[in-house]
Image (cartoon, rainbow, N blue to C red; front, side):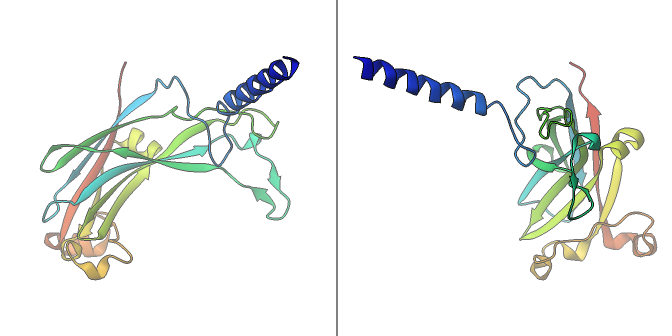
Length: 198
């Protein structure tokens, strides 16, 4: 009988320990915030020469208060934790996609006993693929919130060019000479982020 009681107590102890460990994360694998509230909408558009095989959003998170991080004695600097989370982009029409993310999706924690580390979104990107070629366009969240809609350009000839699959297509801006001099050879893509009011 005593053996059964001891075994039951041991099992309960293991269960409780496992349950507690699941609520904590690490800098490389942060825990999810169980009650996120800061919801944002991502809207992407594309005037590509043809359809995309796939399109997805990518949200970059960083620890934004370096005081909570230890100094790496070998490198002589702090190693700032960061993580990326993919989000689904739902098709609205032939040229438009929408997705959502939570700015407070990750749980703030004291990883190093130097104070609570705060996670925040630092970048928002879109990845579209056609015949194996990746077209990535991204901007910092601060830029998107401050300046609104951002436009990038890709060379039309890269769409469907399997030779470009290894390195992907390079995004350009309207200020790039090749775009301003030969606008007809490029197609625009955009991304904008909007705060979703609860």
